[in-house]
Image 1 (cartoon, rainbow, N blue to C red):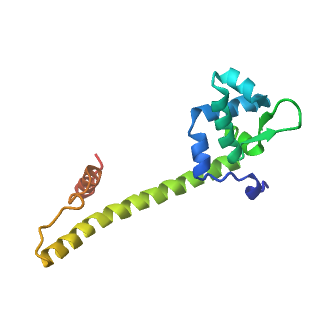
Image 2 (cartoon, rainbow, N blue to C red; image 1 turned 90 degrees about the vertical axis):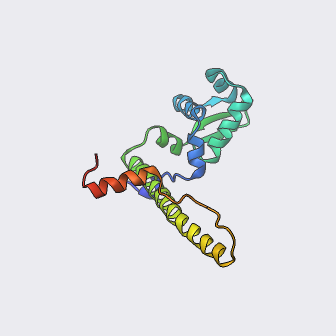
Image 3 (cartoon, helix red, strand yellow; image 1 turned 90 degrees about the horizontal axis):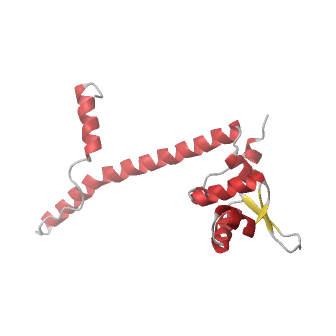
Length: 162
């Protein structure tokens, strides 16, 4: 059986940022063919050497690329195993990537729901404080749910989704 911990790719903020750039993905694809220098990558992709260096630095930070400095004239860059797995994931990597994405989406959804639920409470508390002090009531948040929730409520009440 495959050792899940050894083959695991953790999808944190840095990794998502590294993969968010099409240029960095193109760099990974070029390095999947063979190790290359900054000059070679710059010529292949039509980018300035400084841009290639900056992108490579971010890829090194997340361990997708490694710098090979063997005291020759040129410094080469090559894909790490982690970088290879991002380009060519096996089944275990696909499952872990899907699982981490699902968890991230779930947490984001719950966070949004909690923030929406807090909105009317804040308005009610602010209204009570204002009235107790004899001040005019300020509206701090929308008093009606967003249109998507209204549509969902109507669908649930009507018994159908269309």
